[in-house]
Image (tube, rainbow over all chains, first blue to last red; front, side):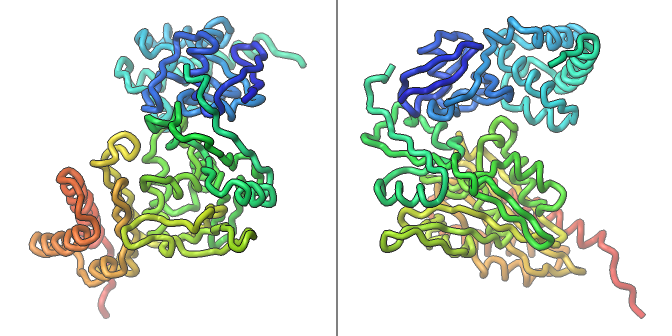
Amino acid sequence: MKIDCTIDGKTLTLSLNSNKPLSLILRENIGVDSINHCSGKMCGLCTVLLDGKAVLSCLVPAFELNGKEVITFDSFQRTKGIKDIEKAYETVGATPCTDCYASRTLIFESLVNEGITDREEILKQLSLVRCHCMVPDDEVEIVHKAIDIRRKRNVRRPQFS
Amino acid sequence: MYEGLSSPNIHTPKNMQEYSSIILHYPSSSLWAGGTYIMSRPDAYPSNKLNQEIIYLGGMEELHRFQRNDRFAEFGSMVTLDEIISTGKTVLPKVLIDNIENIGSRLITRRATIGGALATSGMTTTFPGTLIVLDANVEVKFIKKKRLHSRWMQLTRLLDRNGHLVLPPQGMISRVRIAFTDKNYQKFSSIGSFMTKAEDAVSVAFATTLNQDVLMNPTIAFTYPKLGILYSRDVDNVFSSLRFPLDDKEYRSLEMILFTFIDSTFQEISELQRVRTQGILRGIVDDLNEKALTMPQYEEG
């Protein structure tokens, strides 16, 4: 099956098995090593942004990718967005461990994008990452801080279309 | 890897006419809603099924619609659980909201659909039990004499004797109608993971109105993912006959009666499931005892 999609800013046409999970596509066809493939065990370590929203890539089949945009942590760390999240880590004084850094950062980015400030909502979204390296209060504070930082950055540099 | 294996054919109908012509042409095809359950199976990829045909329902706009009036809410089967929460959190029955919130992260609920949660093949999710308690109706589309027919029916009518939801051959759930309820005690409890440790998981949905010390129209459904759903009018009647608060002796007798029903329906319930069911039941009775004791009584005279 031919799939047209954008992965990490590159528009690609891939010839794939139609039910191949996105996590395996990224590992085997694109060469992204930071993604874990857990065969749908929902470990939370295969998170990517699909059209700007965090999803578990092991649950997304190839045929659903047609026309979609996928951003992995590899390309996200070259954007300005990560600086807001990293600044929030610094301010709060808590950083995820190396195992879950990529997934947690992408989920934080998704929460910041959606502007979610509700504590329960934040914790529920992050509950999927089973790594216990962060305290719930810190996670909530990081999201609040990152939203503040991004708001200030956007006010300073308004984007004109 | 596995690129040489035969790739399933994906059909993406845009409307019901296209769907009916595809299902007539490929009667043994599998339906794909959100795909969260299918993709989490160990044999999801590479699939050992040859010449597999998949009908992806995500392209049918009519299955994404939802509407609501002052009596009920109606959801297309492709409406995601996250959309249900965001549109109806304040009006939908608490037992349904608790069930959706119990699933966990939005990364899952954003993909899982109500239709998929009801018609998962090979296991029972927590949703059919909850919707049975809410007396939900579903619209079933099925093929008869080479034509697509549709019929609204109560979800309980799709339950077979073993507690499994059974759809007609080549049938699909297209809409789900949930009536708003004013029952003053609604509880959803689930212990264990339905996705990863299904053999030990259990969920219970319960809804009733506690009036003074008796329960009006109680409905309860026990769900064991690998075995099925226990829902029976007889079990509901057991609850109707109780007067709250229950003392320890009455509670033990209730537990014994309920386990007689459960054991006669499912012989293979595990010890852990039994203990977990007891725990949930104890929680429900404790809640009702507390509610009965704190409820303002009618003043005489």
